[in-house]
Length: 244
Image 1 (cartoon, rainbow, N blue to C red):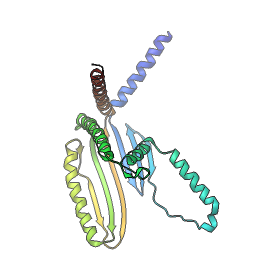
Image 2 (cartoon, helix red, strand yellow):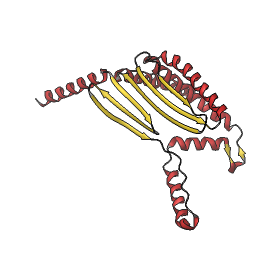
Image 3 (spheres, rainbow, N blue to C red):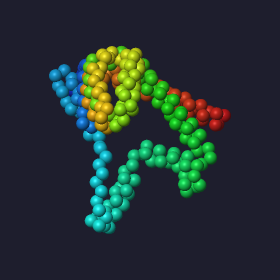
Image 4 (spheres, rainbow, N blue to C red):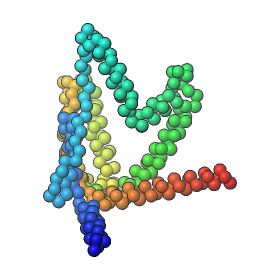
């Protein structure tokens, strides 16, 4: 009896997961005032799944007479904590930088730049193949029916502002046909306003993306299996050459 109940629960869970993944999900992106918010809507249920506020640079300097030794200790502690909390990819970049230029070993290292460039070139080729395969499997399976962009900017120099204004529209004219090759996308509602009098930047963007999660899961699994098979083939090929 218990076995049949467990099998029924398992079948119900699989049925719910299958129906959920094949439903059309609506993802709403909203960026304004340095804050990115992402909402997900399925049927009539709407949920805020992500909210991140990008940090802005603030200059808060305290006088040395007020801060004294405590400020120095706090700075040292913060530096030590930041070094301990650095992600692995940041540590990897620092190590690669030392492979190219290391002041302790006399400056630029011979052959370091070529080694790092070759290593990252291989990583980029693998990433490009995987990303290209995912986009190929998702071609015309993602719909972007609405995109609204409001941009006000100024460089402080009228000539440079005019050049940036023309460049922005030129980039949009290049990117839109490229996106149309992979997505069902409507032409974005653009409003770019140059400010020739002062230096400023204000951006507000909204977008709606409709996709079935099953298509994404299928594309990711397919590329993951292909990458695993390629890795195993290269690994066993090297081992076979090594041991004859």
